[in-house]
Amino acid sequence: MDHNFGPDMTAAIDDVSYASSIKVGLEFKRRFWEQDEHIYGGISYTNTPITLISYPSTNFFSDGPGVLLAAYSWGAASYQFNAIPAEERIEKALEYGALIHPQYREEYSNGVAVAWHRVPWTLGCYGEWRDMAAHYDNACKMDQRTLMAGEHISYLPAWQEGAILSALNAIERLHQHVIGA
Image 1 (cartoon, rainbow, N blue to C red):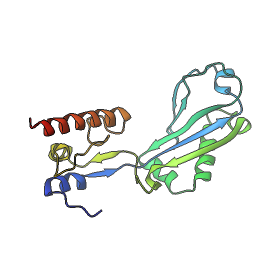
Image 2: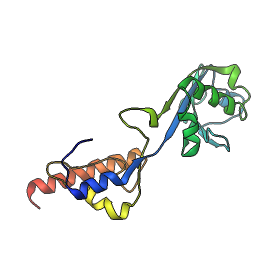
Image 3: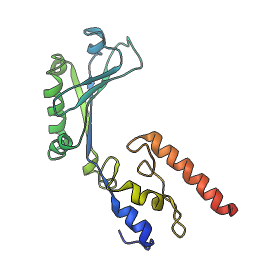
């Protein structure tokens, strides 16, 4: 991207790349994990490429359909998912999830898969610094009329909390700049 930032901000920007990650959400006809297995919220970690299954922690004992975060993967496993179309990602989540919950196929209704690495306006899920110690302070400084904020400019990267704290900090820094402190 063309810009006119100074050398310190440019170095900070160049130091951050974005990590690959995928999520697959699956809707099931009923909340079988509660009804059959008495699972009420929480996470099942796996040694398969789906990495984990996350169970909803709301609307316990509800009748009707329910949705699971059926895959949340990053790193090497996410690249395996990024390389295939969304429909195949859903199929893989069903395949691996059925190893844990045999009801998957029978109870499956529909699904959605997102691979952040393939979303054109983000090209990744969260920022990863090569040398945060060398560039973080410069990323936090105002460069001309630009002030940066985001999960990657926080000490809680990859989390919404980090993004919110970064935004609040940027507002504070902007306020201090405006009042001349």
